[in-house]
Length: 252
Image (cartoon, rainbow, N blue to C red; front, top):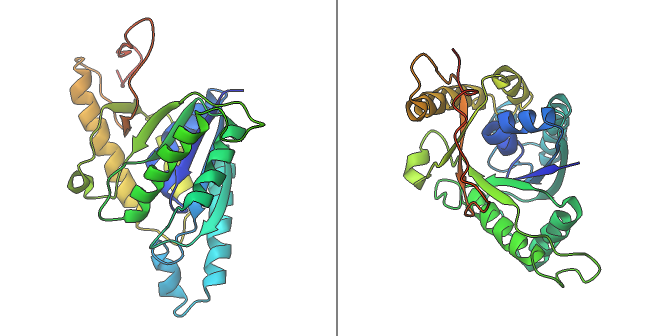
């Protein structure tokens, strides 16, 4: 079975930024694994702290764990988490080696993670940097002597902090049409009750990216209603140039 790996700084990042693609790839027969580094207890659980002034933080972890479980089950994604502290997330050598080991176990063809620059949320940039370091280690024979090396998979960075992704110089070079799974993605985001503000943010984002993708499509009568945007990290390698499939994209 082919596999996709999504590495997320906080509880909901993987779902909000790449949930549509995750659902599409589950439907294509991929095993999609979400690796969630923190629950976002300190800085990504506003509604919990409004409803529970003073905590306890352990209750927040329990709630966020259940949110992840529900969303992942609904989407058909396998989710796991490490429960590191957020704000500020740190990824030292030992943590990066653990991530390397997990990459070698999953052996993904595709990896999605955060954009490499996010001054509005340094946890995101820390995650991206750790993923690139872990992938670099996994590609070298000897990272774990009893495990074969993994050639670099295709790596895509997803949206930085919304609604100001342009502030972080997020560079889009890939759009995926998610019109057929958009409603399911939004229902999955609704599972994250500690962050109800995510729903309008990512509804707006999908519409805006769909509008931008339609402009690139340039096919009269076709419109991409909802899209997710990414930056492809590594150069494409193949025997032919990849072509835009204008026959399948967009609504007639």
